[in-house]
Image 1 (cartoon, rainbow, N blue to C red):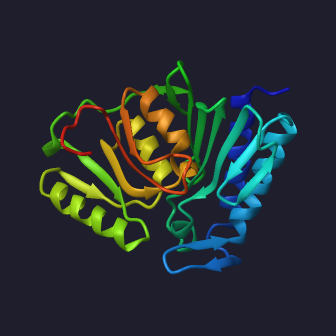
Image 2: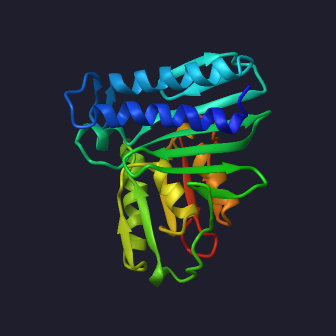
Image 3: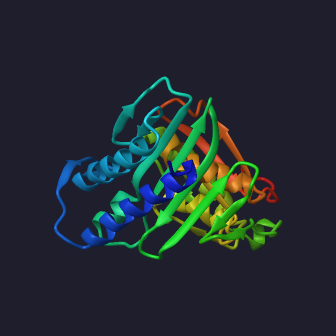
Length: 247
C-alpha cells in the first residue's frame, strides 16, 4: 500500500495531467455563477483524485469542493480542491493548482499542492518541514511592511468585499506591492517558499487553504483564522510570521 503522502502526490499529479491536457480547449461549464465558475473538469479531477485516495486507503473519507465520498466518520479525512483557481483556468490564465490535505483525528498532518503548468510540487508533513520538488523551503525573512509583497483575495459577499477592501486600502500604502493572483492554495505555497510575504482573505473555504495552512506553519510562518474552519467560510491571514499590523 502506498504511503499517505505518496497517494496524495499521485492523485495531485493525475489531476494535473487532466488539467494540462484540457487547458485552453473548449470546456464544459457545469454552472456559471455571478462571481465563480464550476467546470465539468472540476468534477472529473475530483473523481480521479477520489478513486486514487480511496483505492489506496479505503477506510478514509474525502471532503471536497465538488462533494464528499468514502467514510465521513473515518479518522483519516482527505480535504480536496481539485482545481484551485478555476476562473483563471477557464480564462486561459496559467495560474491554478490541485490542493490535497489529510486530516487525522481533526488535525492536518500532510498536504500537497501541485501546479501543473510550472510542474511545481509543494509537499508538507507535520513535523518534517515543507518542500518544493523535494527541496526544503522556508518563509522569507522580510520583517518590514515596506519590504513586503502581499497577496489578497476578494470574496463574493458584499460584507466581505467591503471589509477586504477597507483592509486592502490600509495596507496598500504600507507594503511594497500587492497582488491578486486567483489561487489561495498557491498563495500559501508561495509564502512557504518565500516568494510572497502574506496572504489575506475575508471569506475562504477549508479546502482552499488546508494544505497550505500546514505548509506555511512548517516553513516557519504563521496562520491566523477568524471563525470556524469547519464552517462554510472563515477569514484568514497567513504570513511569514514577522510582519506586524496585517491581521
